[in-house]
Image 1 (tube, one colour):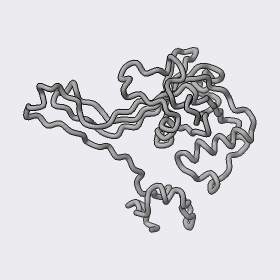
Image 2 (cartoon, rainbow, N blue to C red):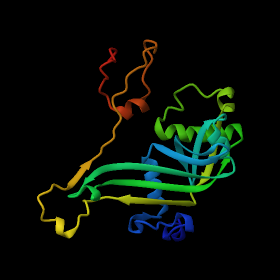
Image 3 (cartoon, helix red, strand yellow):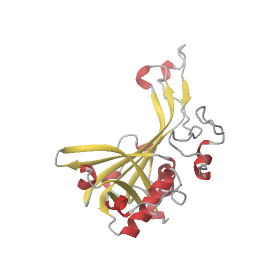
Image 4 (cartoon, rainbow, N blue to C red):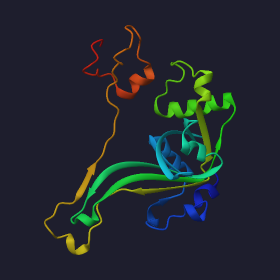
Length: 228
């Protein structure tokens, strides 16, 4: 990363105006939030008006990868059009001495730019592997996508050039005159974790769980898993 990439906002529209002291423009810091996130909310303008949808995503080098059905109106609208993608991780509830000062500790990234279609079959499959492995790295142990699967799926790429992050952590920020009041203030951490994997009801006997899936949820068996 060059110093220019981490020195400040890439454009006027990614410049943080409200809460500017919480702005983060460093590309590595932005990437770390994207790596830790799971769901992106993707907004685009369609013929029926604006729409925002939650989507799984992946990050490769300096590009964000999105996928969906070729019949998806938002995906069709995103081809060569300006889109906005947000990823938010909530780390805790901030309880203040007065309700209007309650807040959350969070890490959030906003990416704006032009989304374009990845057309080539091999290129599309490679991008889909990045998206899949961001959540569940089983691409190499599952059935490979068929030609029909690939034809029914659209993959979009957009650069991370216009991206910014906003991060809040720490205690509540109360009014000085409230600090002596007998009202509790503090932080309630939010911890998100995968549970123990359990097999599908129609899974054939003797089919082993992929090591990557087992690693996601640990080794504790789910109550419904009689095979362990």
